[in-house]
Image 1: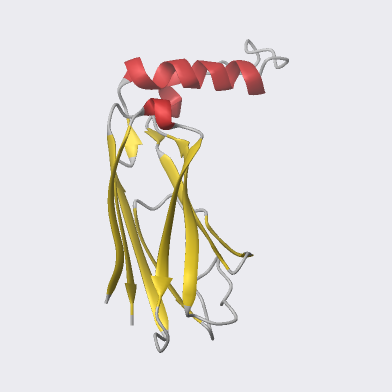
Image 2: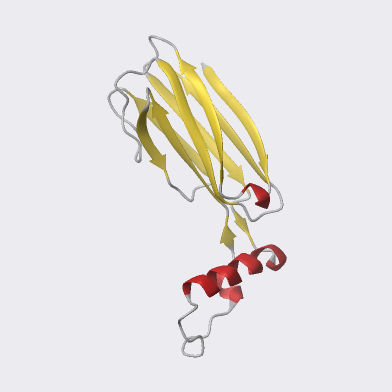
Length: 150
């Protein structure tokens, strides 16, 4: 049974923000399946990638003499868009899927859960989640979230 379906469209201005979602699991459901995908997974356009690459190089290598090990911005391409998922239930943090994968599936029951998550004490009730938009470099990045109960 489909519990939630959301379609998203993000831009670089959405970087470092969160998109919350919630869904309700009925009594008797034994497991939820969360499927999330986003596209594109990587960006190669120098116009979009080079400013954050340069910012990171200045931040992390500012005291490192670049003459000793020259770094070319091109060597950091492609740059990945990064979106992660976290869940909580009844005020208890259940975990985070901190993955680079653009297509993800997570199964959670009261007995076991996909890597990164803990099983809840009970399945029934209101669930809360977040999509953490760590970095969106592409001019447009689309996402699709589906939660199903079984």
